[in-house]
Length: 620
Image 1 (cartoon, rainbow, N blue to C red):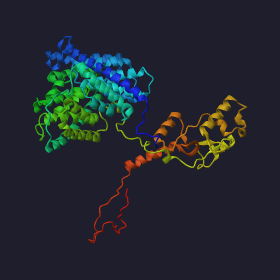
Image 2: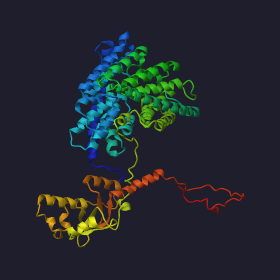
Image 3: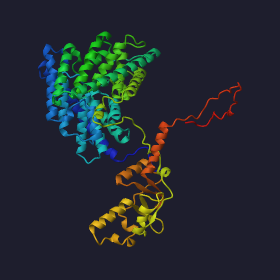
Image 4: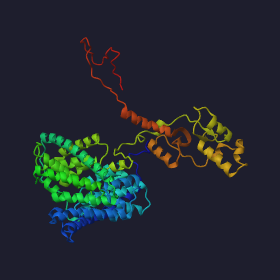
């Protein structure tokens, strides 16, 4: 067992980590470029100036013309998606997940150009989105492109793609820990050093580079820290968590229903962003602050500069135009809108929730709605903390986010991140668990003793063993041994048939199989033995079987590799899965509280009741 370790890593981790550091630095510049493009297009669309000055769409003086601005932006995005790349549609995270899960982490280079450009046009023309989704896809595209320049595995390309996405997120929001958790919960689909270390280094690099590019330091949202929360505040966070879970479900359903609505339209999907943009323009005309990223709204909520009753209209408009425009296939992110809607929910409840103030509940609501909507509670918690550094609010954030996520996963089968896969007939699970094949060793599942065949056995006798033996003694393959019983190789039924058919086709009428008494088992061995050791995990052997395309492996003595001690087959590996099923489904009780007799006499400690219907043994 000394050969096994806690993790499966090799020296390539150093090389991949060095590449991730480079990608983290590159994606920091990409994030800065995306933010500059958003400011540029905001000024062009709403103020008719070419400038990088930071303005918000709500300051425009266009009047009714503001309705057409998002529609024009949607038209441009639709044309770019139709004639450029369909990959630019959507808010970025599901598209990155799709590339990782089904596209071998390969992104076309043109996506790295078209995605940030389309996102900047969409958000700059008033789209109610954030910059995080586009930077995830754009940073991921740059990471994938750099990875494709080298000879890497699909798993290594995935790591570098996610390193680019998380690095870009860190540079955008100054949230390295939240970006790492978002990568783990939504993109990596694993928690392993081979990916976690490079992604962490990419985020650290982006966090170091960011102040030199943007001139700002964390926290991004400077707030007045709270004091230690009272019990009443913690109880109130339970109620806010329930409300956030319900809102998360409603938002997910709104997007799903809106997508169904667009799919029923009798026009090409290229025109959908134009329709979505028109809806955004109408909503923005009546509620101008609903347009754009809404960073000013988040800042006001966290500083308590709001009237709770006045937020109802803003929340309704923001949620509606966000769901419709997102469903239309335009380009933009979901984190900033979810922060706004979660913060507005907390603000509206702030006047009835005891134990806190007007600045606490918007922060808690942001984390809870984000965690419930994305099914990523740790990401939601860390985003709230890193944006504000308000550690005293952590207990309330933990409670509300956990409850919100719990309600979401109990009542809704899919999140807004995975609904797209479900529509395409694909399934993915977001649960991480130890592979049940890993804790179990081959020595625990192998079959012994082993039925072997001597190297001198004739083909005729082999035929009898493979096809005419009784069912209990018939096997799909046999280890071939020499006179001393030492392993020479494995002969399978498929090998035998393949050799026979090949000989008949290549030498018709004069096949060597016409004289099966003169062909022996040793003549049919074509490659060296692939073996297993008793101490190896079932997982590593399953991977070896898949790598070499075999269904059984001889298990040999580690001190004498020629000595067979057992054999392991695919069916033996299922024993580990059976243990998992038993652990998941079998209900047992191992302790029972002493109970008095019916006549009033009590059972003495350590004495078993003389009742056949009452047992102290495990029950299932």
